[in-house]
Length: 371
Ligand SMILES: [Fe+2]
Image 1 (tube, rainbow, N blue to C red):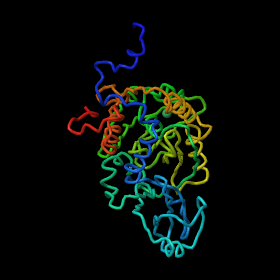
Image 2: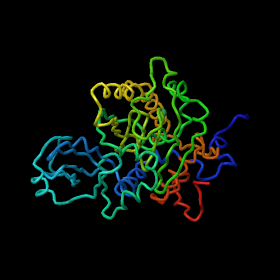
Image 3: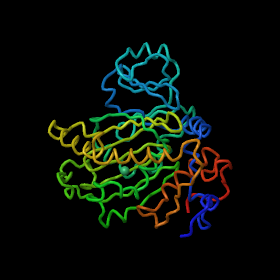
Image 4: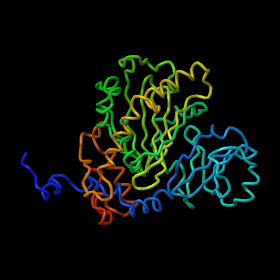
């Protein structure tokens, strides 16, 4: 290949279409970030916690959505509510729910759904949860709804990257080559045949396949503790707009919820869930399965974190803008970037901003992002 000067370096290769790449400024620009908080995060449904974290009346949990403090709390009858929080600084605990309701009259829309997650939105006129998720939970809902779940692992981390980079790493699978564990246990024919499936509102599923855990030295088949209705050792994944991930690996469910803090900072809450009916012995095995891949010292998590934080390092707000390609087309199979194009198409519509050219409004009249 010929050497490139600066002008050539900045050119978009002729065969790459708008919609097949995004401009790096959408990961670093302060104004774009503020607009995302106001136009996207204040409108969407977020699973702020799991019902098992509010095990009895008067138990609460606090968090923020788009910078707005909120509280979820179980009332004396057992129903979970969401309110704007101006009262409580603790992350969780117990408080007289009557006092909360008397002092904070502003209720938010909330719903407990899809395996017992507590979904909240600041949107005053939100779509129903069913409309919002479209068919994206079809691959998993039987497994999540068969019996009560509970949280056995929780940690949160503030990661020096834009929230969309974390969503990208959950959505694309060519970075699997980075994961030694996945290369050893997963690269069979059915892995490469998996398909990305796009749903309304920017959500994407990644098709399932059978993972060969026992190919990894010291690991074991997860057959015995498979979630209900899940073929043994299968792996289902839902990437929800604008940054939520449900990841069911045979015996353990991982859920990532992101709270963007600034263009280059995101808080991620990582939860691991099992069946409430687990015996203590079963629970220990489930935790080991979860943590050996996704715990803070697990096989994969740190590799993903290293990747996204170094990506962000190349895209800070004084760096020259560059383009991140999403132009791979392979009949929707695992390394096709259709899921990325679908996500950024949704992002462009909400923001009325062309993610390929942020100074332009979104080209609604053309079908740009999804072929
Ligand atoms: Fe990964």
